[in-house]
Image (cartoon, rainbow, N blue to C red):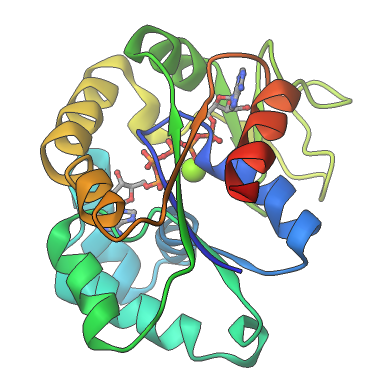
Length: 210
Ligand code: AP5
Ligand code: MG
């Protein structure tokens, strides 16, 4: 399965990608996670990306396209992959076509803005391994400590209310048009993500069956 998850910030892309990755036994390529790892490691890419991310803006296409093409050419992607956070605009989608990277399905997870703001305001993320939690909806076993690796959990820099608003505006302007782009190809699958995480997973698996 070669799958794109296309949804607003905070709709649950990362959360559902983690479940689907185990279910289909394929890797998730999260462009946001790759960028955050580079920021944490202080790489040149991290230094470029940090400014954009913390302003709620996209990192330039040429940078992102290069990262994704390289990552998809690795061996573990041969039998399929999940793209979480790419493509984010028409130019990035066209770059996949140009590189002859075929996509089987594009999943969209629909959640109202009000819920998105509540989810992102309560999100906690592990700085070390990137695992994501929520203060109410997905609590770690020990408060403030990552279940996976024991790392410290903190709020993301871009989860501040004023930046969330900018990220949502950028999504509606630049990313949402991709729904039509892939619907026209007959590969867009829609799941409602308003309910809790397990209900959303059930809706996602049902949408992907079709
Ligand atoms: P990225 O990391 O991809 O951020 P995003 O798209 O804003 O999405 P999020 O990670 O915030 O949300 P999510 O949908 O994964 O939600 P999650 O599952 O965590 O990108 C960050 C930045 O990097 C971008 O803004 C941009 O600057 C740059 N970037 C990345 N890719 C790029 C590209 N291709 N081109 C250019 N720039 C790029 O869930 C959110 C919270 O809700 C969690 O706490 C979770 O536990 C909780 N939750 C999830 N589902 C439910 C549920 N059903 N019920 C209750 N709570 C839930
Ligand atoms: Mg995410």
